[in-house]
Each structure stands twice: as C-alpha cells, then as structure tokens.
Amino acid sequence: MNVNHEDHMNSADKKAYYIGGAVVLTAGLTALYFLNRAAKKSEAKSKELKKVQTYVSHHFTSKKDEIIKHIMNSSWNYCPEPMVQSAYENFKNFTDTPHHGSISTVRFSELCHEVIAGMVKVNDGLSVPTFNRQLSAQSTMDDDVINRWLHFFSQGESSTVDFLSFMERASLLIYGDRHEQMSALFSVYDIDHNGQISTRELSHMLSCMNPNADKADTERNIMDLMRKADENHDGGLTKAEFLKLSLQGDWPRLFLPSNSEFLRAFLLKFGMCVQE
Ligand SMILES: [Ca+2]
Ligand SMILES: [Ca+2]
Image 1: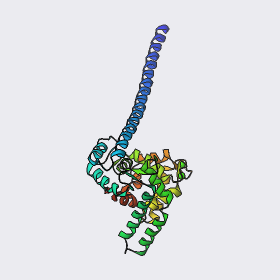
Image 2 (image 1 turned 45 degrees about the vertical axis):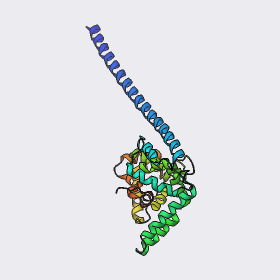
Image 3 (image 1 turned 90 degrees about the vertical axis):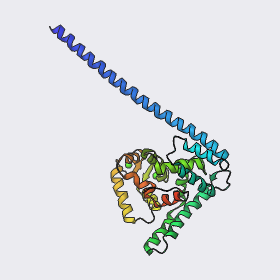
Image 4 (image 1 turned 60 degrees about the vertical axis):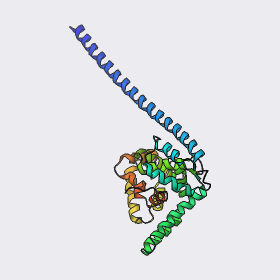
C-alpha cells in the first residue's frame, strides 16, 4: 500500500514538476520572443530612418511630393499628411541654404529667441506682472535649455536639425506614444546630462516652457511630481523613475506641448498645431 501511495505521490510530484517546468519554459520563451521582437522593431525603424534621411538630404527642395510620401509611409510617423506638408513649407524658410535642408545651431537658437519674443509681443499691453514674467522667461531661456532642445530635435546626431529628424520629433511630441515621448524628453530635462533630473532642472525647464504660468503653481506641480516619482527620495529623478510617470495618469501632460506655451508657439512656427 505504502509503495503504491509513494508511487502515486511520485507521479503527482512528477506531473507538477513537468507542468511547472513547462510554465517556466513558456514564460521564458515568451519573454525572449517579445525582447527579440522589440529589438527587431527598433532595428527596422533605424534602417528605415536612415533610408528616408538619405533621400531627404539628396532631394530636399526638388522632390517635395516624394519626400512627403516617404515620410507618410514611414512606420514611425504619427503625423497627418497636411501637417507634414505645412511643416515642409515652413521648415524650408528656416534653413540657411535651401538645398541643404538643415537648420543650423545659430538659426535654431535665433528661432527659440524669436518664439519667446513673439510671446512677449503677442501679449504686450497686458498686466505689468505678466509682462515681467515674460521678460524673465526671455532671460532664463539660456543656451543650456536651447541646446537640450537642439539635441532633442536633431536626435543628438549632429549640431544641425534636418527635416526628417525634426518631423520625427515634432510628430512624436504631438501624436506619439506616451512611453516614447517621456523617454525622449528625459534627456531634455536632464539639462546637465548627469543621468538624473534634479528639482532645480525641472523648475528651470518648466519655467522656460511656461513663462506665463503662475510661479507658485509651477512650484506646487513640481513638489507633487517629486513626491509621486522620486521613489528613493534623493531629490532627483532617474530615467526609470521618470518613465514610471508615463504610466501614471495625467503627469506626462506636464511635459507635452498641450501644457507648454513655448512648445506650442515653437511648433506653430512650422505650421504644426497642437490640440489642447
Ligand atoms: Ca541632471
Ligand atoms: Ca530619485
């Protein structure tokens, strides 16, 4: 009897063992499948970008329709065609040499200052405190902040912004996937590029992005955000901490054009409208 019982137990244990093994193996294979798929997707995306990039750099002003078709057929593009058309027409006016198809560092910086100056001009005649806030935004829009946005729009590839790179980043900002948006924005907000966004960096960048916002409101938002995201309470956000925000309700909106006066005005210069 004992022997039979043992046999029975052994067979049940074996069954559980095999089922457990199969579950672990299936989970492992599934994880590998998704990792492999993500790597292939990213590799395909980068190949596609290179292809379109080469095409755009060779035919920037001469083959408008083909360029737009190339961009529209790219899997990374989230932007509707009329917006790409409009961006193309405006972008051309900001390039130093039309055939080259890129915005230089100097021109990019001038554009940022024009946007801020435009914001002051548009609101001229409003209250003195508002006017003063805008003037102070002009002075806080320093080279560090401008360089981070230049890096964002050029994707760190060069010191100039070409049309393809601009389109990819602008359409990501307006229509993109939350996780990808936050991942790309991390390096903008990490102004000194040390791998962490400090409270000071957050405050500096957000004040530049929203010169008309009430300073106390901005500070309150930052305190709330840090309370929520700074898990190890060291006063800074690592990329992992920052990315967790992309899964938490409305927080990512704080960084997107819908909540950024500067980005809205900047994109509008290229004829790109941001929905509220
Ligand atoms: Ca930093
Ligand atoms: Ca932290």
